[in-house]
Length: 388
Image 1 (cartoon, rainbow, N blue to C red):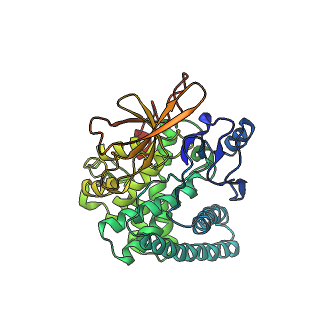
Image 2 (cartoon, one colour; image 1 turned 90 degrees about the horizontal axis):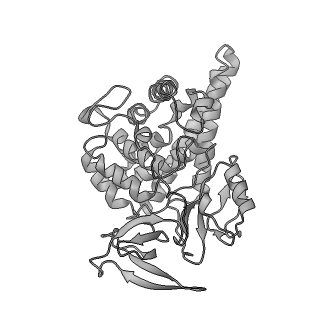
């Protein structure tokens, strides 16, 4: 299977991964044959990238955690945000506020339990690589993003050598890193398109508001609260809310800063369309030592597959192919099935880029370019807004 923007979907392609709506109900089952009417239904639910199978790619990619656990975590984070909205509106009603506070504590307890389950699943997976982009709907983006950031953070945390207790804190902190967005007006949070300078100023308040809320209401480890507070700090001191540099930034918050930015870039968000994994990784690597911790970025780059199996790519010799097999130590030199399009047929041959030293991957594409197609995903996008 391969990930493509919905605007590239053609009739006769097959959905390779089940899609859920904003209430986590099944929207379309894996295996359904796609049509333009179904594409409109998908886009109507705020989903603009999907996994498909077609004549070029029919492989399977397994998620790092089980679908049951991912869905449970998404629902619990959503319940936590919804509870917080109700709690803020009941501060003048002492009885209602206490009842809602009790509910909030139960949600936090549930997240604590879920964080341990996620940590154990990721830890037991061994030397796992990041080759799957989680599909998100715009309406549920914050909740789905929070779970994915937790999973990515654990992968990096294990690579760094964190102990189990640190990993537990990292996971729940990552799931709660955006809790302050519950204090941001929804018309700003879910605005489609670029934010104004004033709107962005309001968005930036979420890290401090989230930290204050967790500090005042729950007995949580300091690391967890600092993740919410510092995940937008940058090692050169240009981040927020305090402009901290290097050692003043919590270690776990530095991890979440990297994974938060990466997942935001490879996802369709209310602010901008997704970019390809290789482009997001190039940006993260280019920002090492400036925005992100240099050593952490080096380790993160080892875990991300820039061209996942099933991706359609253009080679430097002009040929088009599909990534067939990844060399774990050399992810930029995979085996590629080269597509040879004839008048009425498509033929393929395998090219091993470990042997073809003079050939490299130039870019990720989404269809055989026999016609003038729209720009590739991510072109002309600004990464700047993602990490600020």
